[in-house]
Image (tube, rainbow, N blue to C red; front, top):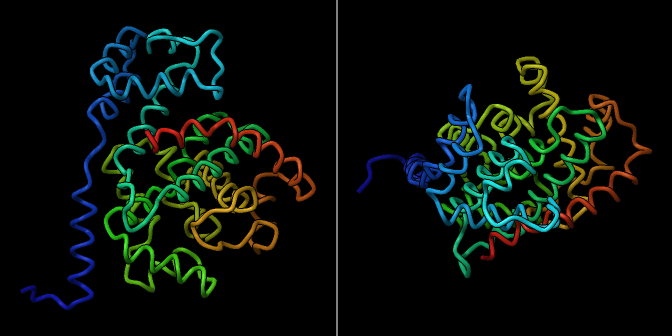
Length: 300
């Protein structure tokens, strides 16, 4: 029998469950090291990826999808690399690895697919916003958007009943996700996502938006972010709000973009204006349709 108070005992067990999540595949962890080496070649990367046939198969499904549109398609990862580049391959490996690691069983208490659909909408929105604002790495922003709520997926995986209760609170009382998680005794999903990002050695361009996309307008948070990470986090914050208007998500009735009081400040930070929202919606809808192969990975 535990001698801890019930609330503390519950949090301890949750922390142990989160810690018990599998780490990312060795290939995903090693790939970053290989790509940051001074002399990495297509052969080096292809050889490393070839050690994980399942991962290679999923990468080939993605690079041969309409999202990339490689003429005639490719039959091995080595031939895909010149088309999409080292950076994109790395982002795809991270995305596929996180999707696999956090996959929830079908028929379980909580269906995480709508959460991934929202994340895919955020990813698509973030890529369009990055292109509109001249960000240096729109593809990286797609990955950051896809992974921004991975803390929610982790909570849904290890504590499905509590997470479902938080979802109901959002719907019934109009709470934000963080307010609802706190109410049911869950740690906040942005902190869980940040902890996992550090444990999985994700680069800062991904881990910072995961941790700070809800808090980027808080002066104490905003001021401590490096300029390049601040811009990326603002894009994910805008994309997170705008995506709720693009696709209906089961992630709870978050405030829609047009009515959220943070809208004006976030748009100003990115140099955007409200009259561009209609065109953004159309571009995001097209990008989201092109991005659906990522969701197919969850169903394979």
